[in-house]
Image: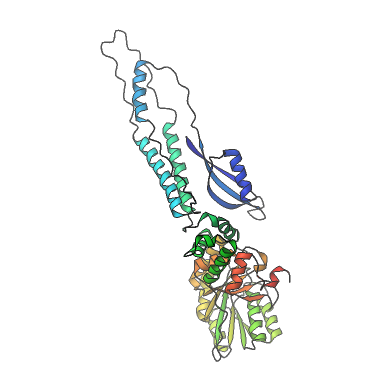
Length: 453
């Protein structure tokens, strides 16, 4: 028997799973589950599908045989003895109530397939080079020459392919280990967290923490478990509590981020909140001179609410503007957006921030950005030393688990949530209970504008 690998796609997990069972039968094993996009243009507007990678045993094809002469039988017996199948290794039996993604279960599977790899390699190494066949002594009749028999066609290649497939299987199993011991009765909650955008690692850790030091029977109650899970999420959510302005001290705040995430609009929301509602002295500085008319748009807004605003083109002008506004309660700094991969732009931005010397640097991320892209953005902006994450475009998604996962993985607290375009209303101070509701329910009763208020 050998193993073959197949991929199946469907609109849901159940659709893909049904296709897998229909083609491969009950012996098929799901190796990996992921989300892909199919169709569209250059990866955009494609249909989102669930893709399963599955493995199933397949009987090896038999090659036709023919009668052998005496000398051929001697060589064939030697070869078959060297290629005798190794004792069959029995895979580890599935443990009853085995935890979802438990280290023990995955480790058993990995050990089993690694043993198969080792056995296949040993069988290849044990094949001897064919030796010439000696003719029988004092043969009464002339020796008839014959072609030396060859091993079964491509036998070595077949074994090498099996090793490659098994190695791939081991890598998949190791990659899918969530790193926590989550009992199977909580599998539906695990899937719910994944569907909400929470990473596998964080989801497994959340569930494990929720059931830790708890009575197993009590936790079987869905209401009790949901409450424990919500408490655990809220406990782990990190927020800043907003901009801390102290009387008699000038607080400088800078917003940074990629192009198009809404830095200027949300800077205006912050300015309106603190200048109009909090009655503080607020000043604006913009270094966003790349976008056409961007400074003028911000200047019009500043004039409407009656606060000063200045445009800077380099680090020297930034330092002068900071000195001019030293007596204000709050100075908000707008920066130019750009590609996170453009090291030259990031270097210029860093020089500007050094001159501005902000107390806080808020990295703005769009909530509708995929988690792996958010991780890349945070990594590329790390040289700027951001102090918090400011999430925009919450009204353009319903999967808020990425907010929690990103904050937990990068170690940055969440400062504010932008839920629309209205200035200054569509700005929410990030609070742990709000983020928890968004992650677990996909909405929050305290963020009405997300749902067409």
